[in-house]
Length: 77
Image 1 (cartoon, rainbow, N blue to C red):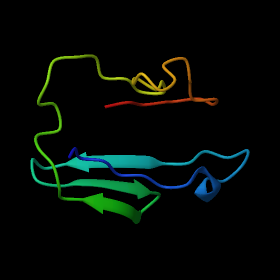
Image 2 (cartoon, rainbow, N blue to C red):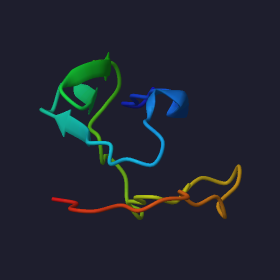
Image 3 (cartoon, rainbow, N blue to C red):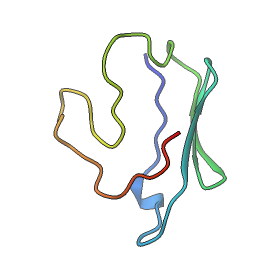
């Protein structure tokens, strides 16, 4: 099992900026849209417990590695 948090793209506003924030504290990953908690997951192992690349805006698995986010990503910290 791995840490994973999701929300539907239909929750995003169209033609406006959406603030999406993910946090991880070594036991839980939480996903926020604006100031609203959309999903949380406490199951799994460490978030990066294996070697490999971290993808932001691109699917990184073998299902469809050529799937990219269609939009603008700004201020990754």
